[in-house]
Image (cartoon, rainbow, N blue to C red):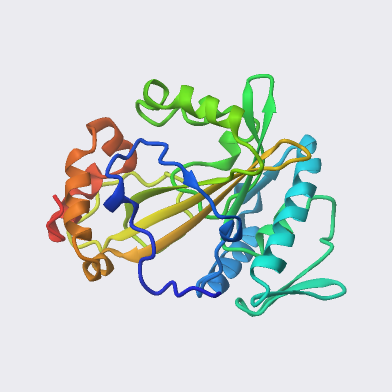
Length: 289
């Protein structure tokens, strides 16, 4: 089924106001990825970034190749089986009727992760156990939320999470245990949210300037899934970004009131990390500050 992405589908702040929480829930196998009306936009977005700043959005370590191959097998089977109304395999390509595009398959070259990422709206990342715990070994990351791939590749989870205020005290031990105990038969999902000043998908955290009161704001939600690959033991981490003008939340009962409460409850250090302090004047226009 091809979903409608014209209105907010996920408002995680309404069900979990905390900015720092694991918030894991079981993931139904047929919903590993979702196919919706924004798929053509994400496909074009990835192609443009690959042409303009390839090193910023796609990197991998040689040891990730077996896991890349396994993820390609697993995810492609999912697309063709769970989303057969949108994807079809031909002799030399995967055709996506929902997005109006085709991707050569088998992919050219020896790193299938990029070709696989062109088939879906989600960003695709691989975490594999190393000497210091689980490490990021490969990623197609075209819609980052305030982080840079070049700074994270090859680093363990705790190092990746270092910039997040309070995460080591509150969550890091639980995250480590979760990665150790995740099983292929029990994938999970979680959600994040933030607010930004434009409808762009690529945000690497470089803009920290104060925002004028007249600036329109956008609600950014992330749907993340974590799936253990049975053969290599790697953890496949998908991130799908949803972006809507903040005004769109008014169509959902209590969504703006819940957002006001969540912003007020945010710890100062975490609010600064999320950039809420620089949005204060613009938030006031929405009666959120």
